[in-house]
Image 1 (spheres, rainbow, N blue to C red):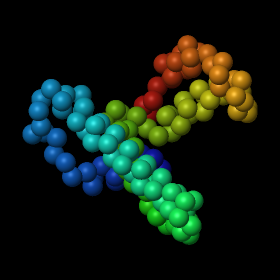
Image 2 (tube, rainbow, N blue to C red; image 1 turned 135 degrees about the vertical axis):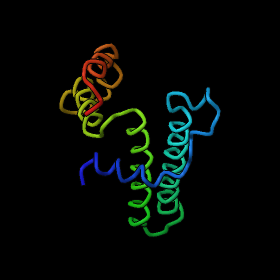
Image 3 (cartoon, rainbow, N blue to C red; image 1 turned 90 degrees about the horizontal axis):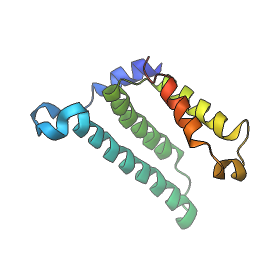
Length: 131
């Protein structure tokens, strides 16, 4: 499935009706973005909890649960992408371009500490996140 199809299918399952919420917070999709941001944090916590159980409590690594949590993270990211009019491919492309500007072909602590934040922002500003 491509990301556009994923986003279109994911948003069909969104249950909250934002049209009746406070005008100030719902303008520009703020409440929808807040809902997605809280959801991303919650699902990331559930992902970490599965790792905690494995690392600290000796439980088997529950790969099925980790995949489920990853899917839930994708779902919330689809809401963000839809609200902002972004597509995953553009976001991924910009992220790689930014990382290449930061590290070249390989991570180093020296490069991480001496980042050119203006250059990174320029990369993000000059390319569209939209399809």
